[in-house]
Length: 89
Image (cartoon, rainbow, N blue to C red; front, top):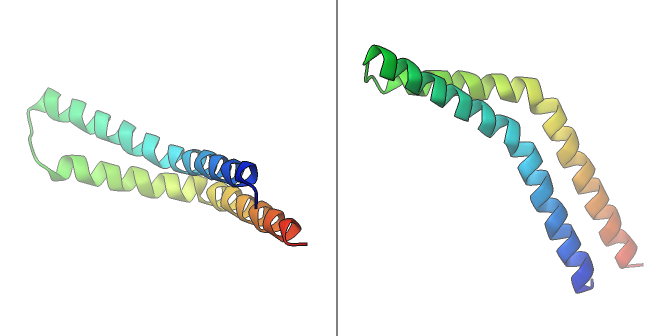
């Protein structure tokens, strides 16, 4: 395997990781900001008020985007395996 192919595989792996993690991270970020705003407005400083909305947002994001995330990972894996198979021939 040449260095160019290895760098290309690593670059594509990083792109796929970012694409797959982005919906989950954004949902947790939005839930955290909204919970923080609620806590600031009501002056309730209960730790579970930030934890529960984040868990619910993460679960919802995984249910909504899970099939798409798995498909992206499947496509990347099959392309990488096919590329490696072509290199050994």
